[in-house]
Image 1 (cartoon, rainbow, N blue to C red):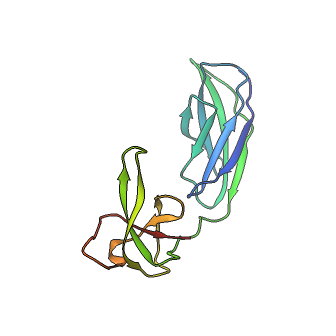
Image 2: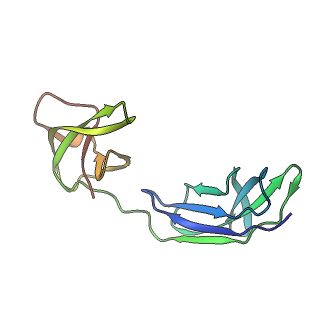
Image 3: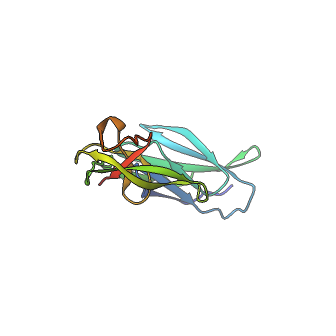
Length: 161
């Protein structure tokens, strides 16, 4: 079997991730074994049937990868090694505008939308970057909210940056 060309890119997501893609000149029916280097050892971290894979578990440092094509009992030689350096974990998001808003489900788009003002939250409060609602709106802890009325929803968001 052939060798394959691998490319590693830093994905533009909320968390540091490495996006891998490679060229398949052999056609269909391949399973791809994705390996990551740790010291001098290569460890399989996943498989794919497409020619892309995202490693979501990256931390600061150098990350090196290779792929092997597998078809039946045959396995290709490893691809070239592709490495990516991740310098920093993205910075903590903090509240930049003290208005706390409720969110409500939008069943048509299967998402949540910012709904109405429910209180205030201190500028500088840490936001939950894993729970984004719309552009720049992130979940904040309920205990950080100074409620302005009796409406105290389970999910509260604020503008964060």
